[in-house]
Length: 147
Image 1 (cartoon, rainbow, N blue to C red):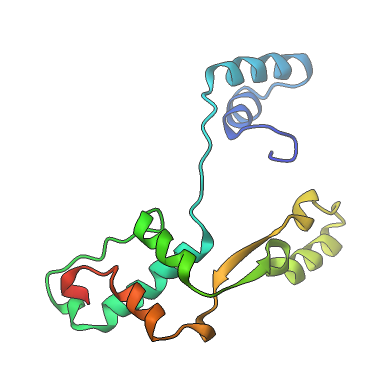
Image 2 (tube, rainbow, N blue to C red):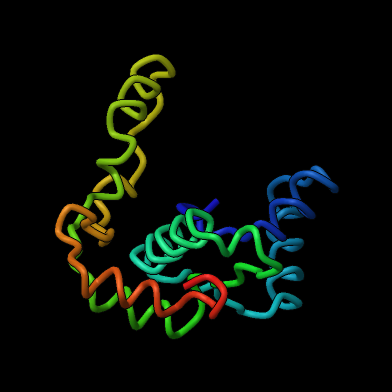
């Protein structure tokens, strides 16, 4: 869908529900796109997701899990993103994560190579380079009963 610049709404209504093709499909697509707001979902930085994972591990490893305390951090929290920006990271290729599996599937299915396989990298927290100050930054995100 993404490679063809089609939205999920267009696919569901025009292809799945109405089973249209050719000119009927084009007209349907136009109607759906006119009614659909251009809303973009913005994902948080992957390093922020790592920070939440690390904080959650700290939270549940401590006595806080036994108290009536709730872990409520999300990777969308600005504090989490600020901490993530201060931690050491390493870059990984989006394609590199699934390269072996994708290559095997492409060979078995004889499908064409997708265009997204050469798209950029993203940063993950390099846990091997974290020091006491970094752990303190993460710990400071926890609620008082979780520190």
